[in-house]
Each structure stands twice: as C-alpha cells, then as structure tokens.
Image: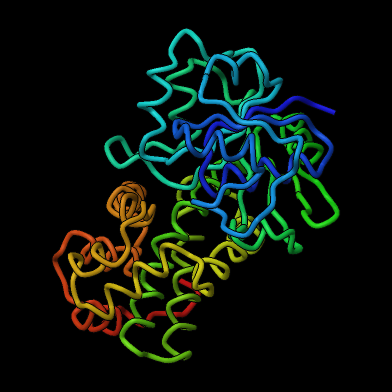
Amino acid sequence: MSRVSVLGSGAWGTTLAQVLCDAGHDVTIWGRNNDVVQEINSRHTNAKFLPDVQLPENLSATTDIDQAFNFGEVLVLAIPAQSLRENLRSWAGRFPIDRPVISTLKGIEATTMARMTEVVMQELEISADKIGLITGPNLAGELALRQPAGAVGASTNPAISQLIVDLFTTKYFRIYPSDDLVGCELAGAAKSVIALAVGMTIGMDLGENTQAMVITRGLSEVARFGAGYGANPLTFLGLAGMGDIVASCGSALSRNRTFGEAFGRTGSMEGARAEVAKTVEGVASANAILELAHRVGVEVPIIEVVAAFVAGGVTPEEAMERLMTVSTRAELV
C-alpha cells in the first residue's frame, strides 16, 4: 500500500484517484475548488465532473497544496497541460523533488513546444529517471464506471514504469510498462489533433469511409512524427498510439472530437467555442505539434489542416478540399 497525492480534482484526476483507491492505496486529491473538495469529503461524489459516480469513502480531498505534498509518497499530476508550468512555478521550493512524479497530461506546451515531462524536469530541476507517464485510451466517464480498460506506464526508468503498473492495476484496469517515454507522450498529444479532424468530418455529415481515412492516415502521421524524435515505431501500434486515437476519434465523450464536430457543423471556430466551452487540448497544442513535426522534416497534412482551422484560416469545406489534394504517394510513406 502506498500513499498517493493526485494534483487535480477534475474528471481525470478524480477518476484516477478512484482507481488508486480500488488498487488498495491511500489517496488524497488536491484541488482549488473548495466546493468540489468539500463534496468529495462529505458526499463522496464529484457531481460537477463525474455525475452519478459514487466515489470510495476512503478517498479524501484538500485545497491545501502543502498537505497534499506532505501526504503523498508518489505525486500524480492531473492538472490542465497548458497551466502546468504556471502551477509548478507557484509551488517552487515546496514541491517534494525526492519523490516519483507521474504525469497524466496529454499535450504540448503551446508557448515553448515542450512535452509535459520536459516542463516538469525544467521547473523542478529533476532528472527523467524520477518521472513517469500514464497514457492510453482512457475516457474518464467510462473508467469512472469501472469499465475494463488498459493503459501504458512509460518511463526511461524501469523502476518507475513498474511503479505505475503496481499503483494503478485493478481488476478492471490493466497497465502495460514501456520504456518509450517520448513516443508515448508525443502519441498522446498528437492524437488530440487527429480527433479534431475526425470530429470535423462528423459535423459535416460525412460518413464512415471519410472517418476511416482520416483516422488511418492520421495514425500514420502520428507514427512518422514520433519516429522523427526517435520513438519506437511499435509504440504507435499499441494502447498509447492506435488505442488512444481510436478512443478519442470514436467516442462522443472525447472533448477533441466534440469540438471538431461543432466546427464542422457551425463552420467556424467562434461557433465551435460557443458550443464547447471546456479546455480542448488539441486546439491548444495543434500549432506546437505542427512546428515540432516541421523541425524534423515530417509531413503531417492532417495536423497542418487542423492547425489552419484552429487559427481561423480555413472553413470545414476548405479543410476537406486540402486533405483530398494531398500527394498520393505509396500509402505507408
């Protein structure tokens, strides 16, 4: 049994806290919203983020970050990706850097184009062997209902990968270890952009043929993108790659797909933002991912089109026209 502090009281942080409790660990959640924290402690629910889910009675929550730091032998990051650096800076000198840090964040920092674990290493001044990542096709709304699912525990340090396996494995949640931290992290970030493109086609009332083309070609782009940074090609055929893309592109629970649908239906970013007010990581990361791909000379036409519509430069119809004029070289190029 371990003591684990989950930093973040949103849907994903609360879901993972429940998984950790089910795995037999003592868990506390840190969050800024006092109402959410009090509800978790008194009613064992988080209706704002996980309606109709009854949380374990032994799960506690706090708004006191120092209490969370003092409690956890392991610290799990479950805060919005684009606010990670700001939060880490606000905790400077207080964050316990002698303990394992597990990121659950999927995204690329828009201003610096850094991966989330790179942000952690930069701000906490710790080495990669203290950091891990849990990623995969994990929609919070389904996992919170304890539906069977799998994920990848990645780290450059095998001991951290095994720690993730030991911490999160339950009867309904299976964790597979990986040493490809870079590949898993890039796959988790880039899949959000592909899900935006698939959502756009759905919003335009295009059918399964179109969706299948975008998903498949999108996976190819993500794999080439990762390979440009030395990732293991097999990573993109597993849960961190294809698995995450299938879940994000195929589920109405996916924020990225939902936002893409709104764009395809309304024809504008303004219309999409009016319908989907929540943080959408693919929107925040699209341009940064495109820039990272260009830095290693990788062609990513779907990601390029998404970056263009996020910037307000194309309509859904123009975006599809661009995709259908992409070079038709050998399919697996």
